[in-house]
Length: 304
Image (cartoon, rainbow, N blue to C red):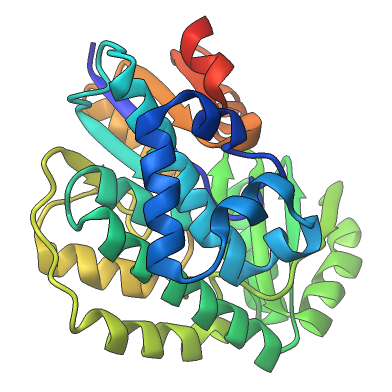
């Protein structure tokens, strides 16, 4: 088995995530306890009890998803799940890319959590300083969506799967693009309920400050292959990984490309570590033959 770990991105969070892991796995519980100590606020309580409005905030959900993903991996290893100890590949959607690097040993858990907390704080700040929006375009090819983006001065934020592309930019420009889409023969466009224009130039203040923050953080070479959202390809050198994490804040998430690259490299089993099964759904939409399992809570570990 050549296993690839998949880590969830912002939007997958839900109140209650991680509670059963914490109750049933000493390894997962230790990570949640360490997270509370590192952050100086009660991530455990917010993840398990909400309220949802607080958990949904960028500065909160990014650390919550990071810890949840790594707690799942720790619980799988603690349970002796074959493959969990030495996966061949890891990749993550947006925020999940940071989780993937941590799983691969690019930095330790506490360092990774500080990186994620700062990334979330800066992105939330950028959301509050701008008026951004996003929309999902379903069933269209990349060229048609990129043409729409050019004409309305917005950006393609996510290439998630064939026929699922997210666009991002100033709220009024996104609204204009949504309104014009039908006349261009684009049948399904859905405005998204988000706090800002992620993975667009409106995140530039966050990118610049995040770059400055990461200057003081030491990265190591990954123990196994990790793919970056910025190119959809594997990245190996610590300096290249750091540059990719900075660029990713304002650049398109090439998730479909990452998945295809992992498969081409030899991955023949994918484990999604995160709530909601979002990445499993995207994988099935991309290539039905892929072997994908989704792990979210303690029961998933024992059932699989």
